[in-house]
Structures are given as C-alpha cells and as structure tokens.
Image (tube, rainbow, N blue to C red; front, side, top):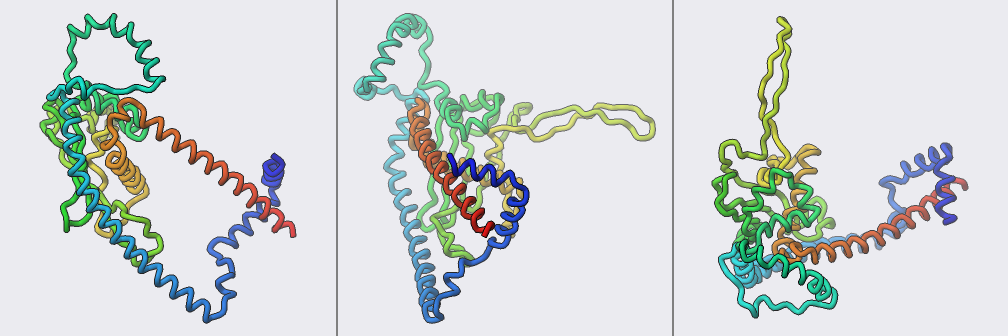
Length: 348
C-alpha cells in the first residue's frame, strides 16, 4: 500500500514527527472557524436550533422511561417461560416428548448421526447414572462467555455448580429506574444464602451541564449484598504468611495475614460511589467493567441462556465482532489518509 509506506517513512523522520506534534497540539480544542465566519443573525438562529435539540433530548428521556415500562410489562410475560426453564434445569420438571422434539438442520443431523454410536455405547452407563436436570447449566454458560469466564477462578467453579437460576427484576412503576439481578442457589456448603442480589440504579435524563451527550439510560451506581460464608469457605479472601524481622533484635517471625482474593463473588461487593461522585481511576475502571457485565447479563445471558450453553449465541457474537473489525480497518485507512494530509500541510 503506497499510502502506508509513505506514512511509515514519514513517521521515521524525527523532524517531521516534531513538526506534526506541534501542529496537532495547536489544533486541539480549536474550532474549525466555520461558525465564527457566520453572520451574527445566523449564529442566533443556530443557537435556537441548539435549544430545540435540548428539548429533543428531554423528550427522548421520556421515551426511554416508557421503554422501561414496556420492559416491565413484557418481563412478566417472559417469566413463566423462564420459570419452566429453571424447573427443567433443576430437574423438578421433566419435559414431555413433544416438548423435546427439535428439527435439526443438516449440519446438526450429521453431528447427531456421528454421535449415535457413542450414545449406544454409553447407554448402559446412562441407565446407571441418571443425571438430574441439566447439570452445571449456568456454570457452563459462564465458562462459554469470555466476559464472564474472565471473572471466574478455579475455586469459584464448585460454588457455581449450585447456581440454579438467574432472574432480572425491574423497579416498580413510579419508582426510580433500576433493575436487580437475582442469583438463586441450592443449599450448599459454601454459604447459607439461597439468593444473592445485585441492583443497578439507572438515570434517564440529560445532564444539565452537557445535554447533548444524552444517549439513553445510563447506569449511575450499583449495590451488592452480604454473603454469609461458611467458616473457612470464603473464596473472596485468602490467607498468606509473611516473614517480619525485628528491627532491634534481628529475630524473624512469621505472621498470618488475610488479604482480598480474586473471585467471581467479588461481583457482589462493588466499590461504593461517594456522595460527590468522585472515584479514583482503579474504582472507575472496576465500576465500568461491572456495569458492562451487569448490562450483558440482563440483556443477553438471562433471555438467551440456552444458546450460550450450547454455544450458538457465541457464534452470533463473533459475527458482530467481525463487523466491528471491518469498521476498525476503515478507521485505520482514514487515519493514514489524515496523516498524509497533515504531512502535506506541514510541508507547505
């Protein structure tokens, strides 16, 4: 690519780089000059358009509030289906033959035919071992999704085998906009809770200081819950031993210290947002990732859990990433063109 070669040669020249940096520094925050060139009477009219745009943002906020009400309405319609899904996963309901019929496509039929012989060989074993429901359903979902598997540690997996269901509960009508993720566990040796919750508070109104940035509801904060761990089973903490040397006597002793440990269950203890809303960079990064995960569980995982269990939804997600990759290539080409333009501008 001639453009790429020219850019590489240009970027290897220290004088060009210095001149480019100087020009770019001068351009940062600079207006294009077009607005300044407009007659005063036209600028007044543009201001009127901006005021109209602010009113549009407030109407859009109301639109999303009504969308939230629609989500509440349809969540109630979905729930009986999700409850039945939960009963099948737990093994408290055995679906009838007609409920289990599934018309496979040609590729699936080939896969099934290849597995038939294996199934016959394992038939005797299956008769001996009759698994209840769908074992490790939610753990498998978590392990199949990169966003969630990155949070999982080896010591989390035995606990998540006891996860029976995840539900989304929306705020009641007339209440501030929010949603709660409810994680239901069967009785287990790790904690006494049967329900762990994570609530996300949302806002659907333009920021007065920057109304044009409004782009739909945003998560403003989240709260977790207390986990009542069984003694010695808290995977969010670990015990380490450190050696300490006495300054005067020079003797060495070993002390035991409890420190935080990486775990999925830290998800239920997010950083608290101060009243002034100011957070350090680490806490901001943690919350940003937390919001993304909470939104993904609500929007994708809960409604389409079986497709993440089988891997079909993951293939769809991969297709989405391919499209984004193509867009990224376009951005790279634009960036190279921009650099060439700047280079020509500097050399004038």
